[in-house]
Image 1 (tube, helix red, strand yellow):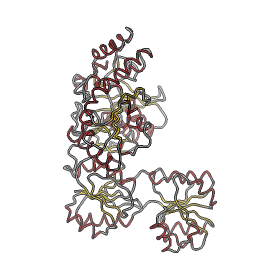
Image 2 (tube, rainbow, N blue to C red):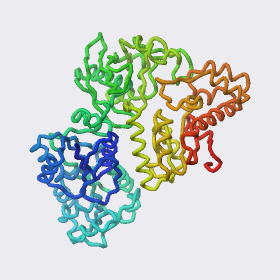
Image 3 (cartoon, one colour):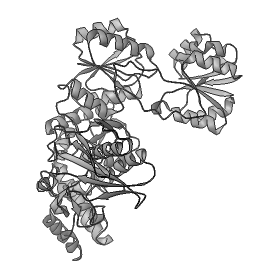
Image 4 (spheres, rainbow, N blue to C red):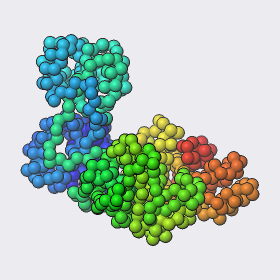
Length: 605
């Protein structure tokens, strides 16, 4: 079992990660006021001392603690560390992101130091943005100088302020995104805040004060116990839990070839610039989270360095799992950019339509950006040549669809999120059932299914008033997901958002659209085009297709309208029998995120 301490944005994020496992855990917060939706988390409320934590962990057979509480909850961090030490339990610290410490801010090691500094600097009128719990800590200042304190509009917050005898007339209530307005109205000499990170809107407070020329005092975040294992996001948390408590998640996550190649580039760059042979390297994922990957080897190759990282796809059945992904990196004066050169085992693009120039190595846009970001972080100015090499790539490519896409002589370096989350059909659909159960319990009568984060972002724009829990990702399991939703009689309307690649497969009746099971069928498209009375000009285009999304741009506008409307209608018809008791609509979304075709019952429109 896992005991999670939260009550913050990070706590809620950590709970979502643990919920994905389907395994029970405990979620502890100091207050019971925060709304937290956990399907498998047992909610606990109330402060816990070290002794309380020890007793609870022994009674509930806790094997891992996750600390995602506020960075300034020093008492809790100390209690967790003491209890974990007594029980020999590991503690994973889910840390928030912090911007670099900027000049022009008066950094204070604690509240006493801040009081001394503000008094000596002659601050006469202060705005406190440090929260109601810091009123006693700053009492030596506000009892002498005019001070306003911003707090949450809660009875318990007012009661805390009253117990400290803070003047009611100097209390102001928090309103979202109103920092600058508040500062303009109060006209303080200075503001004091704490280093609360991105989720604490630290940057917004600083920016508002600077625009108005107001001095900023900031209390630095406390140092966490050395025994804590830090992670900076959901990927790091899951990976840490998988390592420390392997039975908690039924399937292990992994990293894409793009992330693996980026790690190899970082290792080679460090060796090249810093003469550092790294055993592990940090990599920033597209989400902004930083993860750490192990490095297999680094060695000099003339004036370049070659680094190797082993691909770890977790429990996903990936043909590249365990392969060596190598990066040969060389500095150059021949250009001032990052150039990607063809390496052994990496495919070459031979046909248009993939978003890459013909003749370029098959390294997709997101992995390219990841590598470029890391190179520029280490080497802001100057030219760099990167050659990705996959020794077993040419043989592995025969087991992929690359040859059909016109990618020759190797595999592709791909990945949009940077991570691989493996799901069995049973586990995935089980997770959907739980999500729909939560949504309906919260009153949702309209469930929106979408294939992933990209389509979900687009579809949310069409239904901005729906609660977040009403949006559920189906991955490739369209049929099973629809049947799952149909089992909830309170759901009145089911919407499915879909991109063209999956829609073409679905239109043919394939309710599981995973590329390992089904690929785009050109003969089906030819037949659909004939039935839709498209012009003869569309058939050579269909025959020449690399990816279904090319149908948005290559045919004439009239042919696109006729064919893709037919695709949407056939896809809707394939799904309709699975949701017999609800209204049902299908939204076909183009590459720009626009809903181009909406198909469904008249009552759904």
